[in-house]
Length: 150
Figure 1 (cartoon, rainbow, N blue to C red):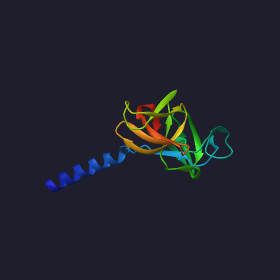
Figure 2 (cartoon, rainbow, N blue to C red; figure 1 turned 90 degrees about the vertical axis):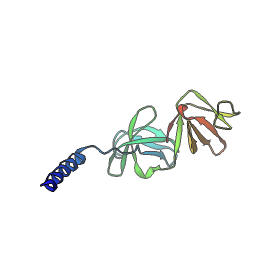
Figure 3 (tube, rainbow, N blue to C red; figure 1 turned 45 degrees about the horizontal axis):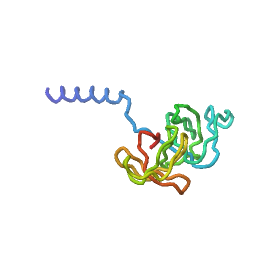
Figure 4 (cartoon, one colour; figure 1 turned 45 degrees about the vertical axis):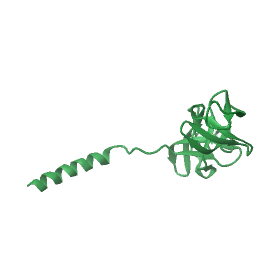
């Protein structure tokens, strides 16, 4: 009798678990080539709304076949062919100007500056800081709150 009751409870609990939406990690991609079209729909017959540069980070919000529906740091949405994306992590500058520092502290030396919309390759993360590289040259740390991406 007890076995039947526990079995029924487990069966009901399992059914509810299957009906619940699964929490999934936010998938990010970056643009893998220069001058890639972000389209209004999933296919080349849809108009190109924007042209994105290599490294531009995007959040995947949907899929249709080989196409990814993505959202950028300004919450604009569009579609990109999945083969034109990469899993290489990038961040984008979301403030007018950000200091790039030699170490992950506000008291460290400023080694350069980056501007709104600059895509930066992500090299390392340390608490609230991200080590980034731009154009293969400028390399340093930026506060994570000034960036959007991985």
